[in-house]
Length: 112
Length: 114
Picture 1 (cartoon, rainbow over the protein chains, first blue to last red):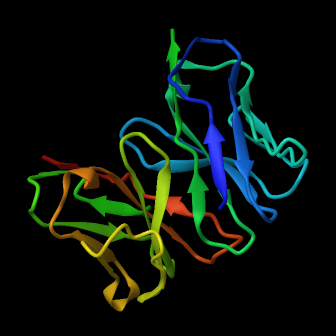
Picture 2: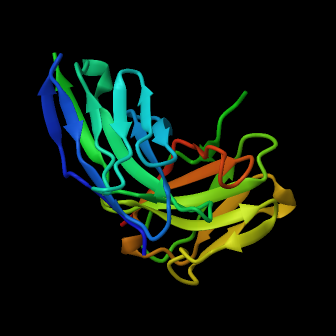
């Protein structure tokens, strides 16, 4: 079945450092890909999405490109802030549907 | 516009007891989903309602879990009797449509079974 694998955390960075969180997926169809973020005490929020190959999703300085050839959707940010500390989830939704399939989440700590 | 709300935010119960989680979706959203994150692992789909009908409950772990959505508004998820492995965070989400619409998630209910 479809699945998502993302790098284990926690990831600890200093403010203004470059961030990459790796995500790869397995899917039989042509899924849409997502990054969700969960800030402390809050619900999951959609951070960005891409619906087809070579699309780039971007939001709040974060970017991810849908790479069909490598089945990847890595999350990047050029300069992280303390306020970016959160848990990040890579996810996909298949072409059928409604069911979102998530990775295990990566916790990010950003130090001042 | 109010987002998806869940109650309680945290519940601690003993093994064998019963717990009922509640989710209020965004007004007007026909689709309601339950997901669960256990032990820091991936968030897993439990089931999907369209209005009051269950469209897919393939992710429900066993018959100790019962989800309802009477009247197509709020939903409850009852665990009876609770087991230790049921501990985790239960998320609810809602959406207007299926494929093209964003799923809006609630803050989750953290369930601890001791």
